[in-house]
Length: 355
Image (cartoon, rainbow, N blue to C red; front, top):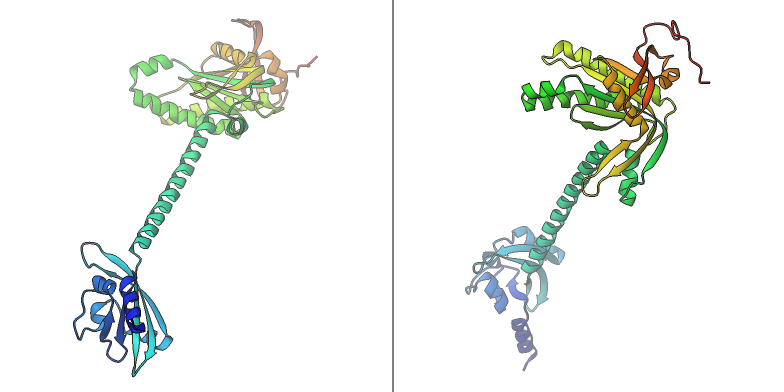
């Protein structure tokens, strides 16, 4: 078998489509079966650009002048569209130059690349969604617990109960809320509470306090935990004054009029995350119990605190003694009424001694 016959046999057997065309007129002089399968059987005078319409004159010129040209074309010999990588090169032989056309079916490669791109896009999209979900969960948990507690919970999965020996607590309860909720549409009631509690949250944040929870119409805030605050008593008192001032101003422009009683407490408290499946950060202890009990003794739009807070509050607030009262679970306590400071510091009320 001659060298030419061997070469022809090789061209027929390989999976690459090969064709030869005259450079002068682009007439196809040879093609192997793979080329014929993809680009149809050429006639005796078929030109290369007729068989591969996607090849332009610029592509031919690039191959002739630069020695090589690469293009991808799409063909549909049957039902399926194929992606064919076409390489043009010039070979000098005999009396005239020939254009060598090498074709390779890269359909599967492009399909795999498309699948990889699609998968990458899906992974990227899912990653963004997971990040958004993570941020949403973080915001939700930060609404349930202080940031330092959240960081501990995120790192270790649990929160160790902590005893805070000196904190101040604010407990607010609305007057006649049960009657209001009974006669008012629930949507209106929830809308009103959401509006008011949102304003309260901004106030507590302004004074360095933490809103611990709301229970129906009750609002519980604390200062001095989880981060210690030496002025925790004045911070909760400022919050209480601002709460009542906000309600007074709101009542002037809203249909529904809200009045509240506020009790302040001071002392020790324990804070921790409670629950396994449904997490909630809760605070309990003597200070919380005191604030809860004392708000019952407050008149509408008034603030009641234990006398032991008098020393810390007298410079910034107007203090009025309410005398001794029997407090359930706490025994007899001297109570004070806390109001906005209307007179110079200490005027009319002697500063009590701690000793």
